[in-house]
Image 1: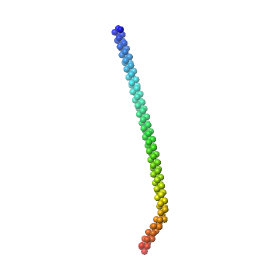
Image 2: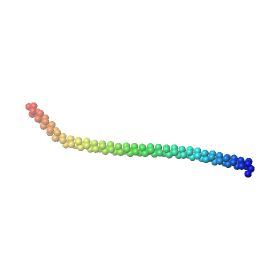
Image 3: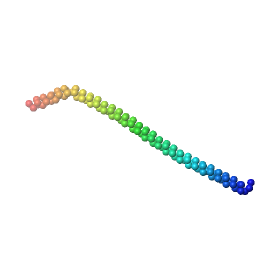
Length: 110
C-alpha cells in the first residue's frame, strides 16, 4: 500500500476515533446531567415524604394528647362530683357539729 493511502487511513481512523470519543463524552455528559436531575427529583420526593410523615406523626401526637387531656378532664370532673356529693352528704353532720360547738361556747360563757 502506498504511503499516502496509509496516512489517509490513519487519518481517517483518527478522525473516526475522535468522533467516537466526542460521542462518548457527549453521552457521558447527558447521562451525568440526567443522573443529577434524577437525584434532585429523588431528594425532593424524599423531603416531601419526610415532611408528610412529620406532619402525620405530629397530628397523631396531637390527637393522643387531646385524648389524654379529655380523659384527665373527665376524671377530674368525676372526682369533683364525688367530692361535692360527699360534701352534700355531710352538710347535716357538719351543721350539727357547728351547733354543738356554738352551744358549748354559749354554755361556757354563762
